[in-house]
Image 1 (spheres, rainbow, N blue to C red):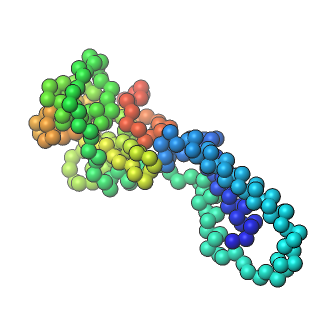
Image 2 (cartoon, rainbow, N blue to C red):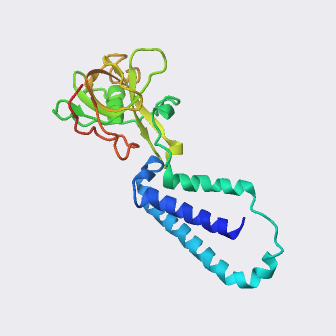
Image 3 (tube, rainbow, N blue to C red):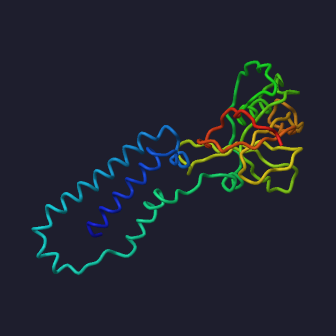
Length: 246
């Protein structure tokens, strides 16, 4: 690969990484929030390497003129394809994962809990999808029974021909490649368009024995509210303050 192309690739890659991590929140589409310092350092290092390569190129240029005059080798055409991912970070960042990914994998297994604290008296009770699933399938005291809860996620079609649709969250261990989904099936209201972020209020949909693995993580919805997509959509966070229900 010729030196000008090497320099260009290093510089564009560094600028792309810094654009996604230092000057915007685009990096949250691909990695966890805690990786931001590493991405910023990587972008700065790539720019430093591009500057160093350019400096050494000028230094060697005078002594290499006679050799270059007889060098007819060209840059392999495939090398130019490396420009595409570098340019994409600057001008067209791929979208975050959503329903397309979630609909093609089974929900992750939630962690086992040995003890549950008493639930607050708040109604509706804001909960994460993980907390709701754990209460439904593991809480022998059945504290969730009869409680009105409030859950937030994005819409994923059920895809199995059954009733309802899924309220979904994607969670990262490291990056988008290892994303896993947490899903709660929603009954009683028509599904908004796929990938729409919503807050749903309702009660547990009786199916199976509450407090055991046979219980379904499902909700009979009373209200549904469209909300803006969170900046960091790869967390199973407590619901945002709801807007006017539709």
